Image (cartoon, rainbow, N blue to C red):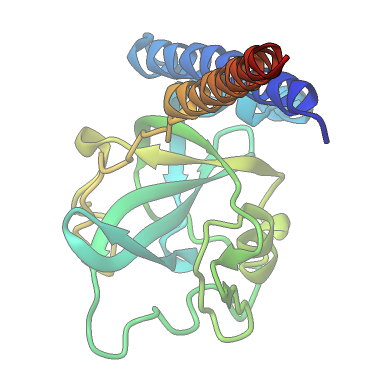
Length: 255
């Protein structure tokens, strides 16, 4: 591979990283705008097909309905408060739609996993709780599980907030249509609820919004490598020219 081709490849990689940098900065700006925007109603069933990471992740939304406390699940989590669980409880809206609400962090306890709560014995709906309004950030489902650990619906062990799997395990489809997203409740919407028989005291508002952004470093690295290669080629050409000139002068002296 010629030096010229390598030089062009390095320049191309640097330029690609510049494009990626602009994309990442635009993404961060869009997310910050969504988080700080006035709260709006969470998308209804008619809009679910269009919900996506690009268009909706971290939108500031609100949901009104009744919690189905008997169908809560715990999802393993590591937060600024330490390791523990996210407490996810389905909320049934007046129109019958069901949205999973991440009510917040609860610490780990001995033998914790909330046995049996994900799979009620019957399809009966417990609507004893009061109607409430929850505000928070719209999040997209996290299918599969975590790194090297897959969700185990049978054992009710969850390592990611997989909406479809949790809904299936909890028979939520018998309650109503389930949204393809969940909502991270903010601090004001979490905490202990007097109508929750479990007495849980989750801590909300712990959503971490951070985007790894090293594209500028990568771009500078590729451009620096291209500059070094160009400099090395020029130095080599200059040395070859000097060698040829020295050889010519030496030949003339012998004549």
